[in-house]
Image (cartoon, rainbow, N blue to C red):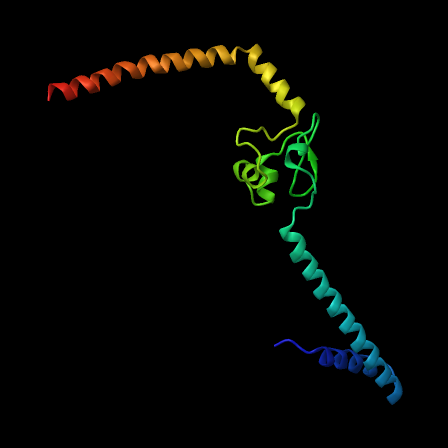
Length: 160
């Protein structure tokens, strides 16, 4: 069981009185001073907990999600820090992943969580390597592969 403030104050003053010689008036004054100090500390602690509870529900940064993605940085809407890219590790610190972060702040699910300059650089590098053309070819090849399989299924149903 936890002690009351009065019990704690009495223990503190008792220890102090054992270490030094104190008159009755000094003990009374020390008890009152210690009790009021403990009381003010308890009130400060209670106020701090209330403020933390209120702040925990409210995002730290007061910025529109669309404006958090800038040319050379992205601002984390949870903590207000600036990065080139919001990494999965950083988002895990806030108990989120990329998808839940986007949903929480109303960002499109395909929105890159990185600075616009980094996104542009990646896009340009992909085009230089021929990714769009290779992707089109892969999709067409997949369609050609799956088309004969569909025909076989329909023929098998007709024979029954």
